[in-house]
Amino acid sequence: MPSVVARCTATVTLATALLAAASLSAQPRPATVPVAATPIITKSFGDLGAGPYKALVIRNAMVIPGHGGPPAGPYDIKVEGNLITEMVPFDPVTAERAGARPRMTGDRIIDAGGKFVMPGMIDLHTHIRTLPMEIEYVYYLKLAMGVTTMVNAADRGYADGMREARRSAANEMIAPRMYPLVSYGAGTTFTRLQLDDPSMAPQVVKARAANGVRVISMDPLGWNLELVGAIAKAAKANDMITSFHLQPANTAVTQAVKAACAGVTMIEHHYGYAESSLDGATQDFPRNYEYGNENDRFREAGRVWTYANRERLLGAVVDSLVRCGVTMLPTRVVYEANRDLIRAMSLPWTEKYTHQALWNWNLPNPAFHGAYHYDWTSDDEYNWTAAYRLWGDLIFEFNRRGGTVAFGTDDNYIWATPGFSTVRELQLGRETGMKTLEVLKSATYTSARTLGEPKLGLVRPGYTADLLIVDGNPAANLKYLYAFGDLALDRSGAMIRTKGIVHTIKDGIVLENANLMREVERMVQASRTLAPAADPVRDLFKPSGK
Image (cartoon, rainbow, N blue to C red):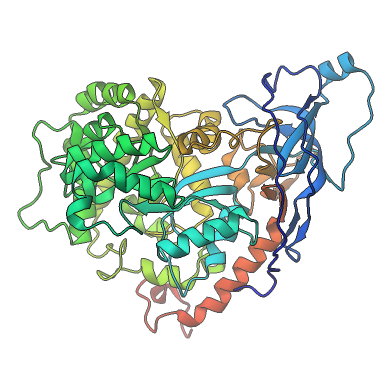
């Protein structure tokens, strides 16, 4: 665990407020929200961050609201505790109407002149992996590149996942807000036969809700469509959501359209869509296919798109998905290696920021999930490239016809490094043809609504202070969200590199992102002692004599 992290035990009392109703961009007067008079205690996390504050003021910020609207401003934004309470516009029109007024002051003032403020992003499917990779490694990278809330698979066990979520909610550590993704029945005493009984679903789901679970994973349950529907119905009755990775082993029974119309909240990844369009009920599996062999599994998961019925997929399938109200959670970044493996293994941040344990798990090895790139041929990459084109067209058509597209990465698997994958996922959303503001909306407002969190996902008075202060306009260039920013020209025409997200604010706590990245680098360099004696990827390209 990084030595600089200050563990704090003070209890923060979070302010509550009423939701302001007027549109941000049309607000002619300051938007304010009354705050309860409760004590707010500011914590220090060494040089990594501090907060919340009695009054934090962000001045001169251009604001991307999160609901799909364009940047507006500049604004002065006041945050009290963990709540946005006031936004004062300073654009020429509102300034002329309002006349001169004193500037807001506070315990801390951040000058955001020339910068953009947007909501923190919500990753609805990610991983934290296990030891020897430090858990802070994932937390810091996700925060530094804009994720303030995540639905994380409980990779270290159900009890650990729930404990970490509670610690994050209490701001006892630097980490995104967490809603662990919990398998149906995990952490209960129900038998296998009871869990497989659709009539028992209300009892099982109610037990999950009583333990604080918000998101139920339904991955292996596609063998029984009645069970899928019963769980989805029970989850909605308990204000929970369901997330479904449609396993190819079961898509002959439950493909995407059937899952959507059974009431599942969101479908993860790419599985089940092409299968919904096939002329027959099942994929054209080769004679030697074995589902447990991931090399087979992922090869055929790409090839199925090459014989999908395109007209049916982009017509009747899309219409059915929209009508049944499911949310798409594409996680395109985690499969991108399949279409260009060498690119994935040679990304420029790998040496400095990819943990050695993560690198080791990515190396081709049948013993590890997602490490199936042995005998991965040019034909496989062709099939996956074709799959990405059609999959992208599916996402575009679904979004265009009113379907809901949310945001997730599924990192850190398959050569996807956490944090960096966040930004790349946004770019891959833009690649489908969705507009940049639509992509940002998917990662903020839409994902908040999917998760059932009405006070996340917007920059507005009355909303939780999960904010990003970005050096550059991400609505113009998504790459400005990388920790290293992007190359640009200043007003004089000189080439500069922007600074990425300068501050991530989570629950009113202001983080120093450059220092988070320093700690990530320290962890990564310490991890190099885990490097294997022989590395089939790196060794070939080391200079002679080293």
